[in-house]
View 1 (tube, rainbow, N blue to C red):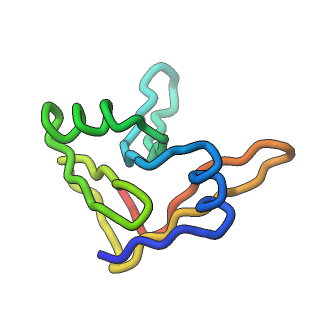
View 2: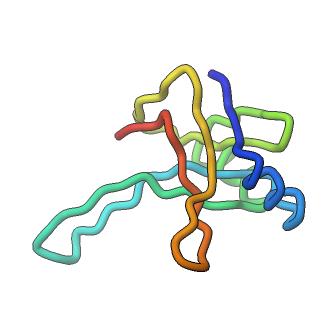
Length: 100
């Protein structure tokens, strides 16, 4: 599996001193419509270690840091690309190459 980062995301990760990204599945069952989507977040080294040791996440080490993949089944392409999506003044972490 090849992991790519957009230049904007690399700049943000270096400026904020962040190294780890976890991929999770978030579900909402509190309404009439059930929503399930992929949830991405930056995690600290300590929490990344916790996810690997206790929650059995799989860690993929890159030149930037670690990508933490859950132990439940997701579909992955040969290349996973992380990038920032700008919405108004906010930047949201997005991924291509991972599906439910």
